[in-house]
Length: 286
Image (cartoon, rainbow, N blue to C red):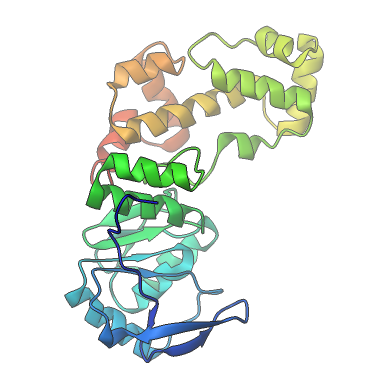
């Protein structure tokens, strides 16, 4: 995939030998002590139960030797048991966020994140978020061009930033009919323009009255609220990327002015747009 090999992968376990995975397959591993590890990535187990003591000791020892340690999905619980999340920010799959907070109160769980880096410790949300985390590791090591090349070779359409939300406004809306979906896609492509009910109804090939009724029935909210959610999601992503001025982001996403976007962020997230941008800076740059 890359012009020359930059990584030498090893599958390790505390004692080496065959390990039965959650699918019932035997995976051959090396004894961890025999491998010189630069980056250690902990895979996601099938549940959040406490790991064996030898795994915990291995991670604690690796923290002193390895350059960085990452965990995918509920692999964060294994890092937590080893004390590696103490005093750090972390994330995991949104379904297990409350449990991670409860079991490891010394970590600050940023549950609405694709992945989080705090010093040498990296954690990610659900399984596909591990791909985004891995691409960011590649970018840190080899630069953005190599990361994009790797993404293209894996047929990944869009690399997500660490600060991006685990949730999608379009998934939350869950429109069932093609007409309402068409209206939502039209809205997402035209966030900088005025998006009246009449415009959305036209995209759905319905009358405004019929469109409003069907839209609320399918999504549980008004078209205006749905458009605001789409604008907020897009604006938040841009803020966390940190590449455009706040005023430009407000204009691109149809808020027209910074103050209007600030009020919308406060109402929805309880934070200003500037606060969200500031909070995303210590995470990972994509």
